[in-house]
Amino acid sequence: MHVALVGVTGYSGMILYQLLQQHPEVNQVDLYGHKNAKAQSLATAVPQFIGSQAMIEPFAAEKIMAVDQVIFFATSAGVTTELAKTFIAANFPVIDLSGDYRLRSRSSFKKWYHKEAPDQAALQRAHYGLAEFHQASGQTYIANPGCYATATLLGLAPLVQQGLIEPDSIIADAKSGTSGAGKKLAANTHFTQTNENLQVYKVNQHQHIPEIMQQLQEWNSQVPAIQFTTTLLPITRGIMSSIYATVKQGVTTQALQHAFQDTYQEQPFVRVFTEQLPTLKQVIGTNFCDIGIVFNPITQKVFVVSVIDNLLKGAGGQAIQNFNQLFSFPIASGLPQTPILP
Ligand SMILES: NC(=O)C1=CN([C@@H]2O[C@H](COP(=O)(O)OP(=O)(O)OC[C@H]3O[C@@H](n4cnc5c(N)ncnc54)[C@H](OP(=O)(O)O)[C@@H]3O)[C@@H](O)[C@H]2O)C=CC1
Ligand SMILES: CC(=O)N[C@@H](CCC(=O)OP(=O)(O)O)C(=O)O
Image (cartoon, rainbow, N blue to C red; front, side, top):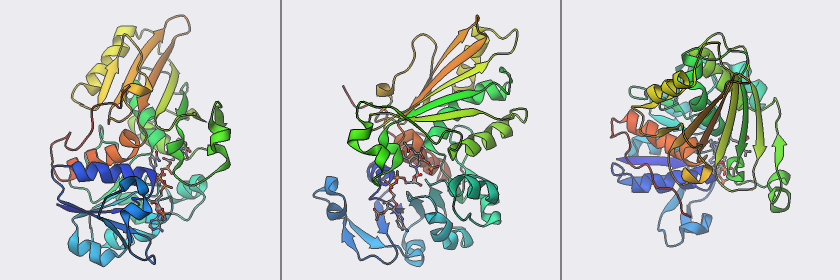
């Protein structure tokens, strides 16, 4: 299969390119950049790809639809609102890593992303690709979930779906490495500001709040809101979402553990831990989401810790899961399962 990728010069795009190159069903990855830019070699644009003969061609929708069977966008927020229109009109398969088509409401997108929203009809038709819960087969526009949203939703799903917690009691304290912010320079991601530091940011204003709420309310309309905070960690890759909620009277440790085990027993990329809590290093370099659960009967709170590699399960890896579903390839094709050691 020939596939197109826009955004290989970005952090999630470069990882996605590596995954696509190793995918057994992909024969060729055609790279595209800005519409009006000149063609340039990948090795020049991204020195880590030294030795590669690949070229990044200017974005051209008609050409892509003629030579490729699917397009991946690993582009900044707002880009697919413009560039994906032609593919949507032609029902050409798109897998979009950005947040542009995740929220179903235009006003919500404008409020949280501070950008012009895509067309309402296109938003309604887009498929929210939380791969463990929504099958992408038969879809054409796949909105790949956000990194924090993935870790937090997978950590909350059994509790919310099965009504095991008080719906108004959810608090998620999520932390990310700096690659989550993309490659552009910003004051808070400078080495001097990040190293040996922790920075809380976007408090009550994070764009993944409406994304998480949209999915939680689809699972359980009783959830009125969540408290969600994000912290920048002095590491490159990884997200840890630490989740707290009040457990309903009568729900036991066993019931909580079974809820997670039952929900994910058929899912190869979600691993449930009841004895020891997962750490970031066990998932970095893999597509796994590892989840640990502890119940405190004194406070009646459940504590869930959910860890992912933001660039894999939180971006390119989940995009490959959606790609596999879309084209009925084996579920784990092309997805890394061995963490980077030590
Ligand atoms: N980083 C992460 O952990 C995650 C990111 N995401 C989302 O994925 C998307 C990419 O993120 P990330 O890799 O971090 O971002 P980066 O900022 O690292 O990369 C953005 C990429 O988009 C390209 N780009 C920007 N505008 C255009 C345009 N008009 N036409 C063509 N290409 C364009 C850039 O090209 P150039 O180099 O030429 O500027 C670059 O390759 C974002 O929407 C982000 O929110 C989702 C989940 C996790
Ligand atoms: C560390 C860091 O800055 N992370 C980014 C996550 C970016 C992302 O995945 O957001 P969208 O795809 O929804 O734009 C943030 O918190 O905004």
